[in-house]
Image 1 (cartoon, helix red, strand yellow):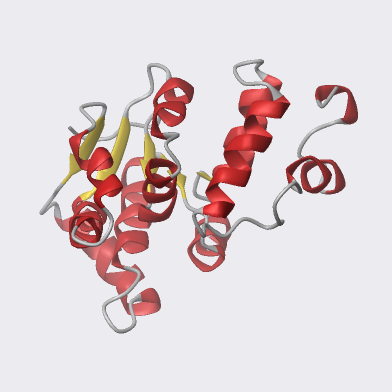
Image 2: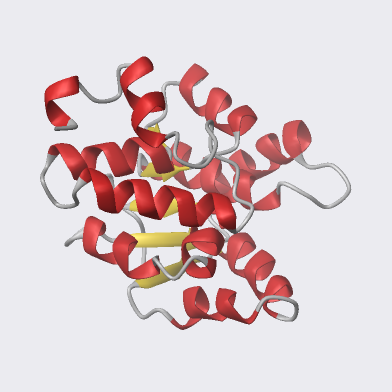
Length: 185
């Protein structure tokens, strides 16, 4: 499947930790009719992790998450450029694949790691992260604030980095202007 501008392209972290927390279905619900993809390098990262963490296999088994693989020269050149900047000791290849897909196809990338997200923003690429996706869900009345607070706390309990501690979702989003007060009541 070739991604379009309406697709969400996920990095390893969000997919892995939503699965570990038992909330992968929330991402499917929030995607609605949007295509959800991951580059083949993210799939490889997840496959390596399934040996240690079986729950990650849910991502690989999800029929609504499609794997993108390409030998297109434009995509490969973008991937190589990002790899020169980000890959160290075999790490961050997933981010490079996500960035290359966003740069090549204009898809919206879901990346929580700050360095690749900053690269995307600097290059004018469409990028989001877990917290803004959850805020959008509250704003659209797809999820309640209390449910999102629970999801965020579960992600944190499974050692996912979010820019706040347990119980801190509401305060964080209000202090950073991600939601207005009337959206949290």
